[in-house]
Length: 200
Image (spheres, rainbow, N blue to C red):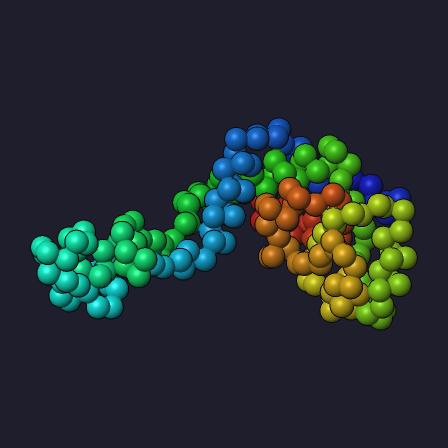
């Protein structure tokens, strides 16, 4: 299939990458796994055996008028341990390489069908100026957008970071969550070629 660039020229792209049927279960699984892998999983609480103190009975068993108590580290005490204490753990989910690539193909194809994918000849600026970036993106109604290039140009990165909702990245940093949440994705021709090498 052919895609038109911002200059009016056309490039041929692989149907395997940009003309795939959208699989919602696959994309959902991959996006969920990606988000789960980003969780820190560092939450930690103490059990009754890890709380300091509690080595002897607070008071004798009978005769005080209070309920019997064996240790100050009991979970029913305010300063005691937790009954089911949280421990550091990994939330990572296994996703096969073919599943990940298949989800990326489905997302890119859907972006193209919904006219949310814009192809430009190149993503470069002469100076790191926000005004220059606004001029480059004028008329596309970006909203939450992504700029994807083969190799991230430093001027593009500096000019884009001052625009709310706009993120610049190279192909290696591309991920399914960013693509799904983006209103518009602007890709250079060189980035398209690199993605085809990766996913074809």
